[in-house]
Each structure stands twice: as structure tokens, then as C-alpha cells.
Image (cartoon, rainbow, N blue to C red; front, side, top):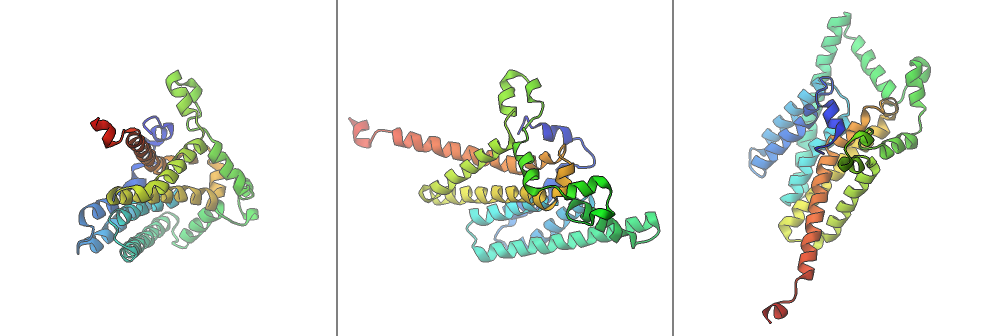
Length: 288
């Protein structure tokens, strides 16, 4: 992740403002880390989700499925880590969902006012939103410019295949030899590594101590959620992904690879620990 060219390139991009993608997740995570299980948890969680998502929506709606998945990650992690039960998890999810929906409604209201100030008619806001949805998801191709019309006809499988086989760093061959092989991996290679780590943790969970097991399963759930957020954008907004092939690989780097790196590290550490325990001679032999 330290060598990620996608984060380096877009880290200074004022349109995307990468830090804002993590803001709702950080705000929710801080609340659950500090007030989890206390009486103040609900109001603070609602406030954190509302303000975090409001800042996110006021900065645009690109890759919103991954922002939502990132915000869900701390809810999944802390709920599993602390074994709070389904009821508490659902309560947290409902609070965060309701607060984010209010933030979305307020941001759309502000957008309507902005467009009205520019065009002189607040009714133009709906046309703007309708056009944005039509060219990204599904619209009347005859009413759209040719570039959007062709993207709407793209096959979902073809779009997904591109983002899976796309290289981590397309200019890896120009890097020093020590980094060339690593950065030349395809995204599917790294995804497979993360999924293998998730499988290892899931299988090993039954043999782990309770605290380590809950933390590990929480990390697996959070990582799976961010993967779902990326796939949701690539599938639901496939027309956008078909056109923005030079930008959208960034999606993998907005949370999934960060949590995936932690998950791989956890799996490797557990495997080494298991090897060390297995290779250790029995107590009777050590005594002799």
C-alpha cells in the first residue's frame, strides 16, 4: 500500500479529495471505539454518521458504494469484536443508515439551491440528477451523447474482467527491479491473496482464543464489506466504469486493500504461530 501509484496520483486531486472517502468511517469508528456499549453511543453515532456523510456528499457522490461500505466496516468490526449480538448490531446499522439518509437529503437540497442559483430554476436540479443517473446506470441511449450511449451497452462481465486483470501499477516495468515484480501483479492476484487469508482465518477461528477469534472475524467481515462496495460500483455503475478505466481502479485502494493487508498479516502471523507450536517438542522431551 505504501507503493500504491493510485493513492499517490490521486492523493493531490482536489476533485476526488481522497481523505473525504474515509471520513464517515473514521467518525463512526471513533464513536464505537470510545462510547461502545454506553448510553451515549446512539446519539454520538447518529451525529458522527450524519456529519461524516454530509461532508462526503457535499464533496460529490462518486464511488459512494465504497464510502458506504467503509462506513459499515467499523460497525461490523466492533459488533463482532465485542460480541454485542444481532440486536445491537442492527440498532447501530439503523442509526447510521438513518443519519446518512438525512445527510443525503440535506446535500441534495443544497445541490438544488446551488443549481437554482446558477440556472435560475430549481427544477433544473432534477434534470441534472436524472442525467447523472442515466449516464452512469441505465438511461435512454437515444437521449444521451454517443460516448454514454456506447458505455450503457457494455457487458458487465467485460467491465469486471478489465478491473480484475488490470495491473496494480501499469508502469511497473519502469520501476527498480526490487519493486517490478510486486507492482506488476494484477488486482485479481492481490484479491485472491486476501480471499485466501479470509478463508484461513475462517477455518482457524474455531481454534483461536475467544478475543483473537472475535477480532479476526470482525476484520474478515469488514474486509468483505469493502470488497462488496467495490463490486457494487463496478456492476451497478458499469457505464461509468466502462468510460473511466483510467480512474476507477482506484476503488480497490480506497479501503479493500488496506483492510486486506491487515487480514493477510493476521493470517500469516497465525500460520507462523501454528507452525512454531507444532514444531515445538513435547514437554517430556524438552525436560529430558
